[in-house]
Length: 178
Image 1 (tube, rainbow, N blue to C red):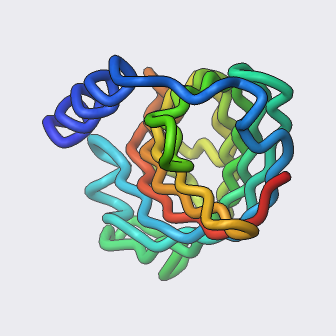
Image 2: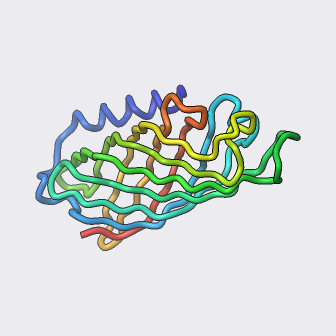
């Protein structure tokens, strides 16, 4: 949690700097993603940090836009109460996004997003809950660099806020944008 707060402070400080014109932002984007998912509370005790992978895309006509991510993963269980040795997950996120340029000569951007997350698992998360489907709000921040035609991004998203499956996902994406 301290890491997320520190990263938020860095991004806010960067946003206070010079801004790139909205017309220069990539309007569309699709990317392959990979990262780590950190559950909180009992879900973390049952299924510790695990690798996730997937795809993301978005449309951003100006400094505002829409963004979506599909993450998949297999989380190894550490609890004896688990029915299987692992829980497969699929997490779908939809968000409204605001993006600002970080400089006049550098194609880098900082973004913030808020939206909704849906998570479905093959095993209950946490195990004692018997719940396999979860829905809740999420928020995230990210940094993007455009190295034509490649767009690289590092995202941190806190998903399912207030749910038993809430947690932090850190993702690196490599894609293309227009």
